[in-house]
Image (tube, rainbow, N blue to C red; front, side, top):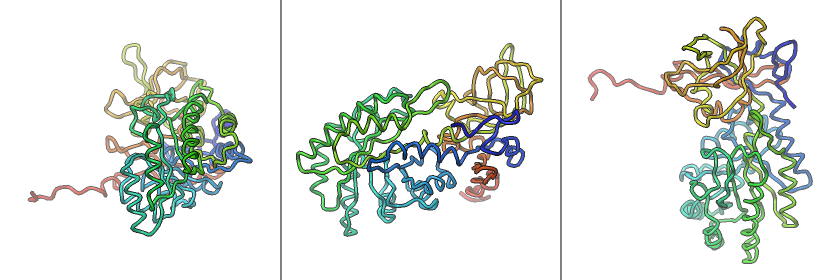
Length: 419
């Protein structure tokens, strides 16, 4: 189901024409669909019907408070990787006892804040983190709920920057070390063992890597059970891919069905951490063509969005579909590189695209709901774009456009005469 659809010869978000949103809020501008977020979340809920489960949306994919609040209202839990994401989830109304804290570099301050909030579980990634949690919990007269994130050394078959399950990646504990660390955790009075966690990467378009990792993790679960160490939940992470171009990733139902078949009769609560698959195709980036120029035979469409707004193409060589919001029947179809105004040759939104466009045309960059605004910056002192959440016929300003005053307010020039 596509909640960004053509109607009256133009592109709509739910019941609102994107031209109206661009006129009201300007460009560049991120636009999200509430209905799409809910639809993608409910696909997981329906797939997990009849199974003890917890869906923890991966906040890093899109951490806007409006997006988080939509998912909290659906009953979602949250997978966080920083103290800042913890603060966002709580501000958006997320339930603390549905929060899982992942990440390889948690600070003592972050661990303390999460303990104060009463989160569901820490996904522990090192012996030192386990020791820190034990000491912290003992000092509070409590127990810290933990899972160990294990690294199964499985190739996710995705871009190396978003692969997390190989030995050369920084994440998790090796399978060889995990059994010993669980034994140590079982002897720590400040630790409560809840589960085991495994996350092998992002934008996976096949179920096979999931299953290969799960088979190895279940061998660990069974070995722990034989030693009297009870694992109550199995966290298989997230990473399910979406369609950007011609990918054909499996749906949540297909993934969950095969995972449940592998679990068999083991009494485990299934935890999932989807991010991209919930929000990527629930958003677009609106941008306007400011200029068209030719260098020899190479044609450039210079748009008002740039790599500071959308870094995925430059960082990951990501392909994202670009379409005119209103087709331009008067324009000749040509091949263009869509580039921004930043002083970098890597500042591009798309390359070698066949488009019929002229200066002033409004374009929509599809599949921009995940890892786009969340990774944006102020490079070249550009103000970050606004975020709009569409709910039927209503456009909610989820984040206003930054101003130069917003940026400068955090800084202080060196005063005259100061050393």
